Image (tube, rainbow, N blue to C red; front, side, top):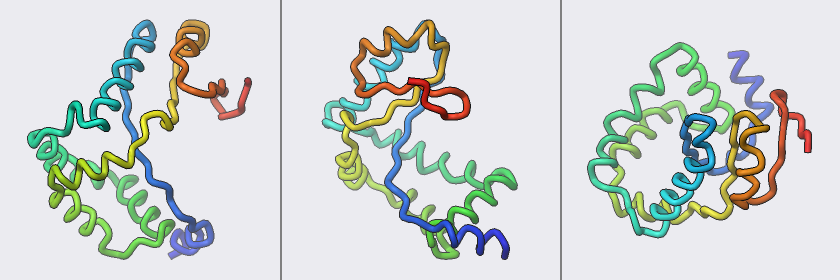
Length: 151
């Protein structure tokens, strides 16, 4: 398979990734960041741990969407090759998700370090830059649509 050979040349270790997204109105950007930061901190510190019904929702809803389109299937196959995953990786992943228990989830959450998160914020720079800088999220880089650092 051509894709497999090309991707094998680019094979590398993949860092652990955790992501959260919150599409909001531009005038609610700062408030939304504050709320998301609070929720992550509460979750990680155990102040607001995962609930059984949340875990069940992930177990039921997470898997089907990964294979709904041809692109999704291709992405899965490409990732399997790129990251050296076995051919039965989708089934292994399904087993891990459906086998999650709250204790193991709580331990995994401990690997999240809220102070070390990378925030990617998209919006009208003129309206949000100053208030976002006021949040002191860390080093702030402004990039254009092509990813070129402007400042």
